[in-house]
Image (tube, rainbow, N blue to C red):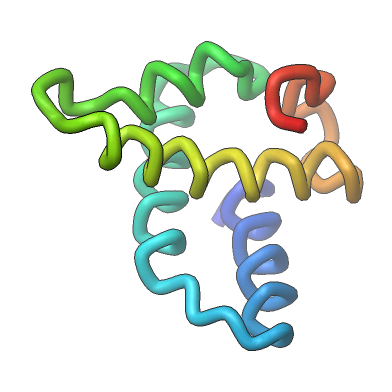
Amino acid sequence: MNDLHLALADYLNLRRSLGYKLRRQEKLLNQFIKSFLDTGAPTITTQHALTWACQPKNACNNWWSCRLSAVRGELKSEVVYGGVEGGVEGGGGFS
């Protein structure tokens, strides 16, 4: 398990302690992390999130929105709370 998976577990535990179930978000976020790690890039960028969220190309806008919302919440948490050291760009596109 790498730092991103640990940060995701912390994020999900925090949100679940507040009463959220987050079943779909957990699945989507794990898919995003796998996709990001496959790129070999040193940091997550807005472009990584947008490219992943807009998959598959023939999906409807609502599905893309769902995927981007899941990633946005986690990345915003990482930027605000200082999660993964050097793992997320400076938060500009996720506020």
